[in-house]
Length: 200
Image (cartoon, rainbow, N blue to C red):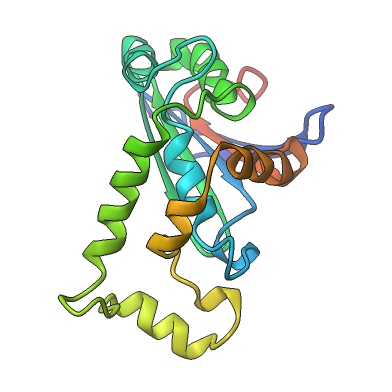
């Protein structure tokens, strides 16, 4: 049995809480309304690249290792994924550490370091290469189908973008994309767990 409530915080952030008393963990997911469909040919891939870069540390924990240690130290795990229509960040955390987990997730969006950009660029480049054959042709079935169905439309763009685009993106472009799309009014947060709705 579960109950669902929804509302808005004063800053415009939409919040959905799902009370599931049988759970032993809380799952908080932030859905940001930005993905490949919101990109141009020139900016294609920037959302996915930014998603990666947000894990590279915050002002409070300025390296990827320090940030990851902070998440793990409260018994949490954090994953993210970029899609055509949205980008999601999923935090799974013990109920008594939900407040601290929320702080760390919020810091990703508000005070990212965007450090070691060349390291992350190499990781994303490898992801792009996984979709190509030895002749450099895209062989990813999802990419090929969407390119045919949505020919010429951003919904048909590959989520990872091109290697050339990723090589060109710098901190200035990433921060501009963050400011444009990662504000409270463009995000929905869902929180599912055993805590009362008001607490969540």
